[in-house]
Length: 95
Image (cartoon, rainbow, N blue to C red; front, side, top):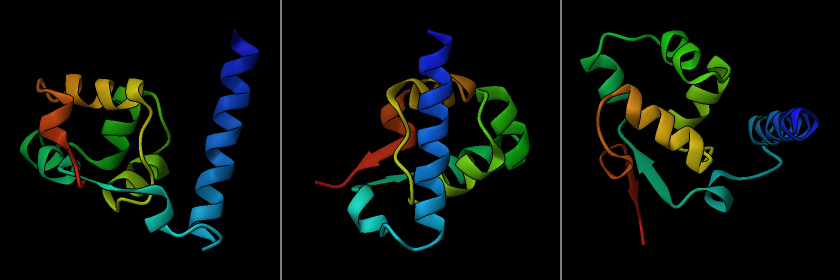
């Protein structure tokens, strides 16, 4: 189980690298907007603070806020729970 987590984490880090380097366009990944920055401001949290609370790197929060990365269901749930709200309140799907 731990090995799967490490491999998954490495995959996500590689995906974030590809996004940052421009190899994958955000439009290929995201059909979703979010209100993370707004909620962070309400709760007076930095990106680093939120990252620590949901056990990800700060860069992940940066990519989420820029809509360059779609979170896993668990991460979306953890972020919503941190703010005491629902996933649907934080993440807005564009159909």
